[in-house]
Image 1: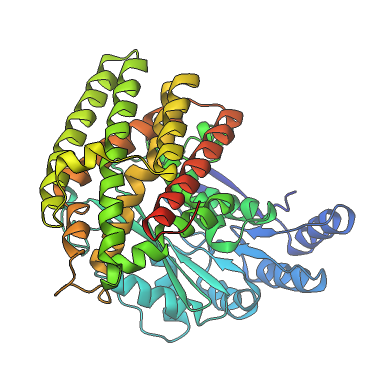
Image 2: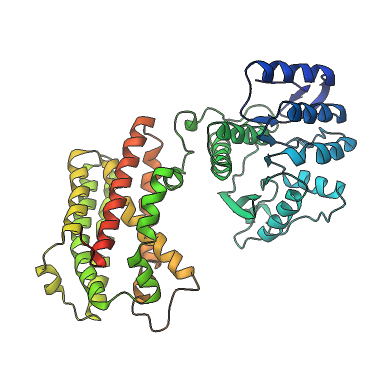
Length: 475
C-alpha cells in the first residue's frame, strides 16, 4: 500500500520538477491504508517537505507502527536535491528516534551528522565507514545501513583514488552494538537509478516476511546487487536496475547461493556442530590425543579415495566439456592431496600400506557411500552439493583457526594440518568448486533448491559423524 508524498517529473537524466502532495492529504492516504488493512512494516522514501515529515512521524506514532525502514532521501542518484535543508532537522528529530532501519548513502549520512553538529568527514577506509555508521546510529535509529556505493574501495581497503583501483564496495550495518560488513564486487555500471528505494523496499519486505534485521538487510543487498548486474541500459543517463532477475523466483541472488545456504536457519545448527566440533577444538589447542588423530588420518585417507571416485563420477555425469575438464582437474588435485597426506602421515609413523589395508570406519562408510549414492541416483549438481560440506568446511575451519590468535602454533603437532587447508592449492580447489556450484544454482527451480539444501544438510551431519569418529565417540 502506498501513500504518495510527491510526484516527480524525471527520467534517467535527472529530476525536472516535483509536485508536492498536500500534507493533510498524505495523512488521509496513510490513515486509509493502515486503518483498514494494517501494516507489518512501513518504509518511507522521499518525504519532500518539512510539513510532510511531521505528518508522517505523527501518523506512525498514532497508529503504533512498530517497525519502520527509513530511506532518508535527500539527493537522487543523478545528483538532484530532493529534500529542503530545513526539512533535514525535522527528519532527524522526529522520525529517526522511531526508525528500525535507516538507510543513508554516504552524502546523506554526512548531511545528517552536519545538521546535528557532529563531525562529518569523508570516509577514507572501512574503519571510517564504521565510525560514520555509529555516529548516525547515535541520532536515534535502532540500526543504520550505511550504503557504500558512493565510495568504492581499492584492494587494500582504502578509498579508490582512480577508476582502475575500484575493486569492491561495502555496505556497513550497525545496530545493537554489532557491526555487519556486507561486501560485494564493484560493478562499473551506470544503471543504478532507484537503487536506494529498491534496497529499502526489499529490507521492509524481508522484515514483513519474518526475517531478522541482519538477514533482511543482507538479502536485500544481494537483491539490488543482482539487479544492477542483470540490468539493461535504458535511456541516456542513469538507467534502472532489473527488478525481474532470478531472485523473483529464487531466494538468492546470482553468485550468492553458497552464502544463502549458510544463512538458512535449518543449515546453521548442523553447520555449527560440524565446524565448531570438539575434534576441531582439539586441533586448535593441540590437546587432541595423538592416537585419535592417527586413526582419523587413516580414515581420512580412505575417505579421499572415495572422494576422488565421487569427483570422477561427477565428471562422468556432466555433459559439458568444461565441467568434465574441471571434474578431472579436481580428481588430479585430490591425487596430489593424497600424496601430501601420505607424506604428512609419515610424521606419525603411518605408512601408505597401513592405511590401504585398514578397514573403513562406519562413519567413513556412511558418509562416502551417501555421497556416491547421490551420484548414482541423482544428477551432477546434487553430487556437487553432497561434496560441498567437505570441500567448503575444511577451508572455512582452517581459515578460522589460522586467523584466531587463540590457536596454538608453537609446539602444536596439528598446526601443519591447519596450514595445509589454507594453502594456495586447496584454496584453488575451493574456488573452482564454488564457481561450479554458483553457475548451476541459478538454473534450478525453487523446489529443487529445497531438495539440494536437504542433501547439503545430510552431508554436513555425516561430516560431523566423521569428527565424532575422530574423538572415539560411537556412531
